Image (cartoon, rainbow, N blue to C red; front, top):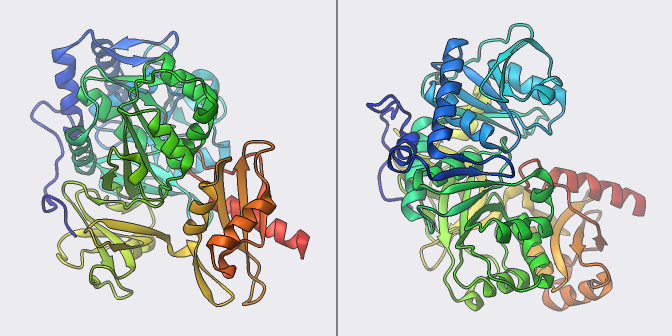
Length: 526
């Protein structure tokens, strides 16, 4: 299955004006409307010209300190105009951004800095003290430019001046792995997102993503490239659906980029919120399988002018496919497809030998084309296993996602979950997402996850963890409903009410933590 164009193997490095291609549209907006609002936060509002000037000073300082032309620059900043200026400034300087989440523990941050060969860190004075630095110099306003203590090792096996950023994600070995993303990958994504956007000049986008999540680049450069305004939320607002709902109305937010689990929480709160005009025009979700329940339908019934878009991809590829849902909310399926590839991208459904399978058959989803980065930092063996030649055009790089999928009867791609979410219980193959979707369709449920615990053919059992409104969810009634809708082997042996589900810093469900919880629950019951 292919996108609109073939992948181009040319570099997409710098444009004639010296800017990375993803920043061209931003520079044009600065020239066209320098006094328009670019970033808005309490006590922190800047225009396009002010933001651009600040990013210029960041770029000058990065170059002066020797971290331009492929130098690795850590970004250790909360959501603010400083963070946005730092992203733009590092890219303008030719540096490689390495986002460092301020909530991460010191040891993890130091590992990331050492692994990436970070030469310079931009941050605020107090948070930077946690890491320990050899020197710090005055920066742009409240930003401080600091060098790590000791000498960082040079990165191995990574192309330098074509990299845009390195984002760290959890690794199966227990150590984070750095995902490399190049400027041509980012330029393709931003150009496609602007071309298909439901928002435009003057519209306001919530700056929801943490610095460590790759969506921040999509969120930021799309909004600024359209001439819109980024509205920053605090970390407390980001994690509180009521505060977030109030912020969206108060700040007249038009667009959200959200993990699906947060959209589900927002929808549950909105059921009890007082009705009122909300200016939302577009909500885009990615990172997790979208599941449409009664709460989601009720939310969009209250937002008749708002479009819901299902985007799918991985950290290694960012967005690879998209599927905008139609206006008729009642027609939305419980598990929407992931749709069709974005421009410059193609997706194959492959068998175990890497050969494309016929439409309708299940296989592993492989992504190829402009969205595929060069691989993992300092992990050549893992890169060789995951980044492979396209099965149709071996000159093009493809990424093996580990997700299962198929091409549906309507020609749209369906994601059927990861191979590790399809489990066997008593000899039956079970898709956990199907059970989760059914539980989430229950009126009082905000979030739900199903996992497996135990060992052996007879010892394995399904456990469900549910977040629901107090006093309005009965696990016994829920189990009875599931028994009426599912075969016996798909009904969880236990349904546990919990106040919240564990999440990663980016807001996604942390399935590893859920598995650990299930192991503990199972051992206490055995």
